Amino acid sequence: MTEQSIFSDLLVIDCASFIAGPAAGTILADFGAQVIKIEPPGSGDGYRKLKQLPGVPVCDANYPWRLTNRSKKSLAVDLKQPEGRALLDRLVGRADVFITNYPLGVRETLRLRYSDISEVNPKAIYASFTPYGETGPEAANSGYDATAWWARSGLMDSVRDSSDTPPAVSVPGMGDHMSACSLYGAIVTALYQRQRTGEGCMVGSSLMANGLWSNGFLVQAALDGADMDVRMDSSKRSAFTQIYRCRDDRWFLLTILPQVQDAAWPRLARCLHHEEWIEDPRFASAASRYQHNAELVALVRAAIAQQDWSYWQASFAQSGITCGRVAKSADQVDDAQVAAAGMLSAFSDDSGRTVDSPMYVGGAVKRRPSPAPGIGEHSAEILSDLGISAAMIKDLQGRGIIG
Image (cartoon, rainbow, N blue to C red; front, side):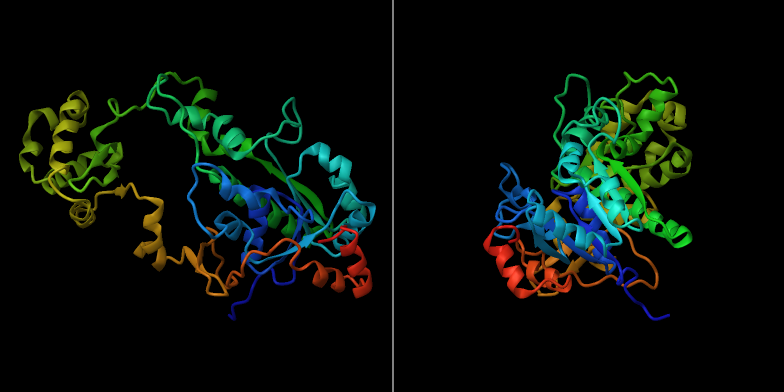
């Protein structure tokens, strides 16, 4: 079978801002869709300035923008002006997918609701993304992944060691990029439905819904009446699911689940060069190991501290013991597994690499990502394709309706 871009005939309008909505468009672009980014002339999408956020890595490249808006074309148009809004309708008439995460009130003002878009193009898939959902008392509230996905969902509280530990902030975009996969899934499901019915529809997701899904283990526990005051802080965590520090100050997470603990315990003891622990009555059974967990944790910590991470990585792998290094973000740049599994892609202009979207489809090649666009970089090209004359384009530019 010859590989081809599965969405090469798909036209997507990314009329969204910042991350979650646009990132769904990025995945579609990865699989070959033509994605047109709508942004205001002059300032552009506010996401372009996220790299100025205090505390984030400093870099000449606009790395957030490069990641989430690669392989797109930019149409800078003032949707507050009737002529600008009319230009969008002409584009909508040709589109397969319309993505927006604008606040509900803004959509009403700019006529960007599902009813507005479907009136122009009934076959279009309208993909809506919100902080808290389309209905309910918080539907109109503003929100970002840090507030709606991380804080509001319970995740922010759940990762604390104790109720006295201050909550920790999330990494910018952490919930957004995960949530974008949900919106992408909704879009392609709707495209499949359209093949069967010939009709477009509205699909949607929200940061809070994705936060609850990510935190589903604990939310389901609460739904089923569990004691939610229990916290798995480091003092209570099993020796078999602990975080350990190596001689070279690298950390790793050991993960031996209860159902395999009896079989794995002798292998672990031998790996740690303490075969005598196998016969120690304190550790002879799962029950006794649980009873003497604090002692076992201290012993394992002392043993782990005798060698570097590279030693333990090889030793555990050879013995079939599951563990994971607590890697740093910078480690991914030269990580052999990341490279071998194709998790990074090179830009088409050789300006560097970018994180690939986390999925593949057999027989459907992903395009080599092109650089993220400048503000209005493709405005003239896009409008020309709509049949608008060069003179009219120049006039629209002169009056600030397009950029």
